[in-house]
Image (tube, rainbow, N blue to C red; front, side):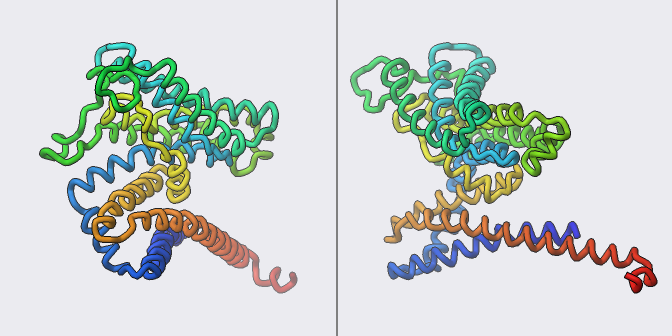
Length: 371
């Protein structure tokens, strides 16, 4: 039974990927482009060493974003506000980091804690609105995204912008001191002068994934969290305070959201700029769905999306619109949701048949005939 269950869960994402490739092929044929050529180019370009480093770097913020969304999903909370929470976390982390100059461990720790606190505080607003006024978190977090975008721009331009100097073309905060720069992992993996450094923040992302797993599956809080998501009424009867769980879950989700932009801040930009990467929070929703809220699945989903985005860059050079990757990503999301639902129903039907067969074997033949 367990083996069949694992097989079915494996078949779902694979089938979703195949459906996405089929739909993308139809789109390519409609514009008179060869699907085989496009996929071959993407595969060759994505397999290059420089591309593989870029794929891992792209996957790090998507992985953290997926974890932030997933911890809410485990309790049937839909934190759609990871985008705004991550922007505020990156801005305030950069502002605080640029205002002090401490030894490396302290500098990086203060930046990370500031970003997590900012994300948690912004997400906590949605939690408070839900438990005190009954405002659905989807509505509140979407609205808070829009507010966060405006607030972050206002704070950057009004309070955190570095002093102007001739030649400045991009509005940004003060640059972080070198003690706040996260070292790359090039030497550790034997990379010599790669086109793009392998960010050391990969290790932080892995650590966060381990903490997420332990917290959700190996602690009493995680048990209450999952129980509240599966059956809120039963969880309440067992002594779980639903309002307290909502607040705590939203705070944890927001704290993880604050880490989403940290790789770009600490490893590459070393400042928050007006064109800081966006869209990571929304893509994280897709990554969490593909990964079924499990850290291993989320990691694989993040790598998949990172591969698609990176490998699609070669298409423009060959006359193929690179926007095809957006079709692939959207189709993967729809297909994986449908596939997992089909798998869930198949598993439930299989378990019902197995339970019925076991019950039939346990009932003596005479009693069964009498019945």
